[in-house]
Length: 111
Image (cartoon, rainbow, N blue to C red; front, side, top):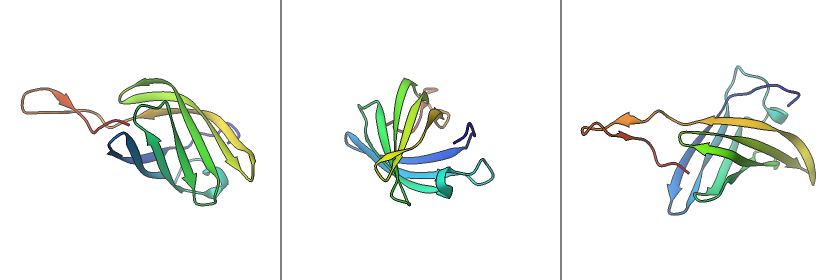
């Protein structure tokens, strides 16, 4: 909000073609929108967007312009009381891939 940057964390679990999990805004960054630091994430693995429902009943839609696991970027729009509460861009980085015994890189399932 107001050109500020905040670091957030998504903890996601895949269930078939769906994923869900939690959203956390890290303390020590710019103040999170509306001082809300927790939310719930839902989406589909084959979609380019996902939804975050916040504790204050607002919600945000994230749409990925580019997705190259474990990285992505795009735009988001947050809504509250029937109107736009916030808009901006985002960058995602996933956990680094870990080597296996065979020397292949594997990571957590990507949404």
